Image 1 (cartoon, rainbow, N blue to C red):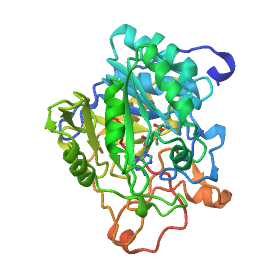
Image 2: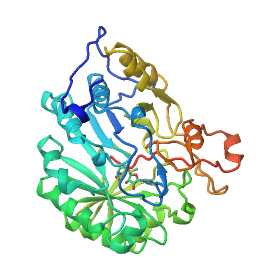
Image 3: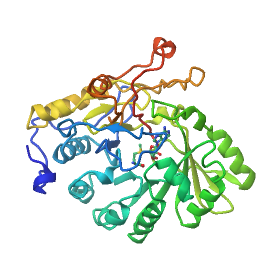
Length: 389
Ligand code: SAM
């Protein structure tokens, strides 16, 4: 199998005997936005996201760059117009720029409107200029605090200066930036105003994300939970927040802050935000397609990709999966029982507990009343979050 990481080459479209059809789900929604996780690895260990001690997947389980390109291109052929690369940390994937450069051809052809990514910013100094060269116009950078010590504590391994330097490089490269900040009780709740003034002062949008108390990441995450209604109420004491219609195809609701002139978004990942107009699906780095953020139903596209050189099987599998896209979320935030409400892996990395634990963690755990009442799972999960527009 060709591997861009080794060869640096790019292979383009595969043959198909059937013409790719647009993706329309059973509720008449056109699927035009794909989020793709390109790696399970990350150079940070944010306390609400990963445990410090992670086991990452064997390389063979992860889609190669060529497979990622083929998969994304198949979705684009079927009408996807916006593509977001995520992770893990997308910019730590070896050879990532080969993939970005390859995908850029779809911008050039007009088949794709937007190629973007969500990043922790640590590698932006290195890659910002290349991203801009390859047609990336805006990116999301995750940053929860402007305090270096807190930043280190939240990310466990991160260096705030490195990220700020990366943001500067991205701005110099002409990339528009949206900052994503997870609202964390007792951690950054004293910084909401500062973050807002800073982001807007730098010409960046800012979105607050409600922390999702899912999975076992080794810390008492429920202690970190802070409802965004509270965040918004506190900000409203400092600023005039004017509702605006601005939408970027994602789940955020935006206001304009009169005092700064900037846009402020709020994402409550588990609520029924805009299900009726949902145009999104997501694929993990192992090629598992999730049709809904809040449902565990999934389709294995990796085996389909690997089963055939041509794209017929792949198109068929995507079509079949889209017929199963549900009408909306089925989330329950189970704070009363203090347990994960959705056990899903996006990154597919798990806290280190040995091979058996890893193997068991490959199962998708549906949310049922029985699960709600079951004891806490012993296996950790890396949650899936829709935190980007
Ligand atoms: N590494 C990249 C980054 O940091 O942006 C992309 C992957 S990261 C999982 C995507 C986003 O999910 C980040 O903004 C992160 O803060 C957010 N996130 C992770 N765990 C979360 C949780 N438990 N609740 C809410 N947001 C979370």
